[in-house]
Length: 638
Ligand code: AMP
Image 1 (cartoon, rainbow, N blue to C red):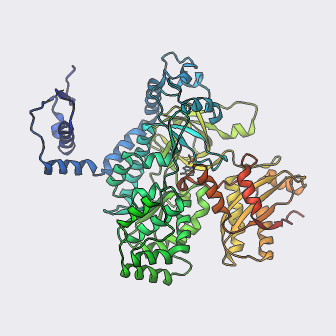
Image 2 (cartoon, rainbow, N blue to C red):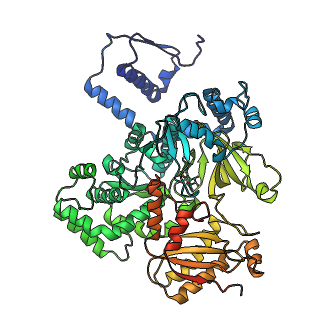
Image 3 (cartoon, helix red, strand yellow):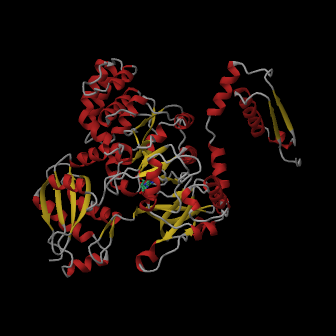
């Protein structure tokens, strides 16, 4: 054993490591952190044997408290050190992933022969899509008894929300993904807490467990967020971050998300003074929840007044759990009732009901941006902080600049949670025939756009995520990415290319005309209709009230004109693309779409309205088409 001036621990343990020893290790580490001079000791020997005295209950409690305390500065320090050396960390991370999994059927196929360096890996293993890995994932789901994608067996399957593709996909899940999730949560919380510290309190978190089912091979399958919420680490991390959810587990994991949502709102009101944060995974859930509040607030007040839960809650486990928190409270009911009556158009609802709420936290970028306007109405002066970037396939980056407005949010990639590559985008689109080569994390160029390619700890190797990101800067040597759009969400008929973002901008421009009539676009989506000759774009809108035909005609023309892509404009001018059509939907249509996805196994908190509905999504197209109340055809370009 080499003994220099480094610290060396030797643990001699006769019985198996028990809690007492863990405490000693912890205390010792604490001592080192608190008194750096002690760490100059070059050798410490701890003899642990069964006759060693154990800690008193008070000592144990104190230790537990220290364990649970969140040390923002330490987390930031770790993040700084990882990102300063992102290239090396990436190489080590890849090595670790391959060492853990080289015996899996999939990796064996690519003949790595014990070489775990990036050069060998990227030249032997191909870039793939979910479709390529589907047969392997299916084998796992069917209960294959040998290592298919990972060395250690996969015991859980994640269902991606599928709201962008049409149907949920199976993705392998393991504990390492939970640990990565916690690392992301801790990292962004550390930066958030430095900028906007919170005290002890609760979070009103609109989180929902999805239905879980068992695959043919006996593996548990559910959404990624459900897997996370069910993990012990999640609760521990939330507690350490002083943001435990105010609702009981029975509400989070209720079999019916309408009932779950109602009870989340009720718990939020009961604990309204303790609520420090209002959060969800995606901002859509918060907006959806407060839109629901607008409809049920009187019923909620009545429940609080009488202490009797509404008859709409029929699930026994929720009723039993809610009985423990719901007590008759006339004073609170009156207070909330009067506050709601005093609001104009629900402006500032959140600070009115939750006076100690410090910020609202959820993913607000990408397809969530259209909900920001409504969220700001509810938020009044409460700050909106946009959350991190990840997917069912794993997390990618954390928002380490929480003070920026949501529209400017970027994500610093954590180099130890996966091996990341980036497919240059421009060359793909411009030179279809040349196969572009992905580049490494630290080789990306400022200002360029890329598709993210992920290698994770749960059996995905060089997997195209389908997301387009833009490099807008660097944090030390790791890139900061801005989310641009889903790559496959493209409105295109011939030479036109309009992304999700282009659609969003066009809808925003046209919605301004509605705002003059105090109306808003509640949600929207699009479709390329090729049944007409020439084909044309169809935009579906759900509007908050009745708008005149005149205004909607204007909106339709404005939508058409606002797609400024040169390919679209030139095609429209020569009628190679027909006039855009605006179809107005019956109120509640997007709720039906949400119900449809939840029925497929998705969870409300992972729901993203599909912004372009194609032929692979016939059920949603059918819901849309069956609920059209009016339609308008553009006269722009005539
Ligand atoms: P899913 O795994 O199906 O729930 O969805 C993951 C997808 O959600 C990602 O691939 C992105 O397209 C999108 N997404 C996740 N995080 C963000 C974010 N911070 N900003 C924008 N889009 C995001």
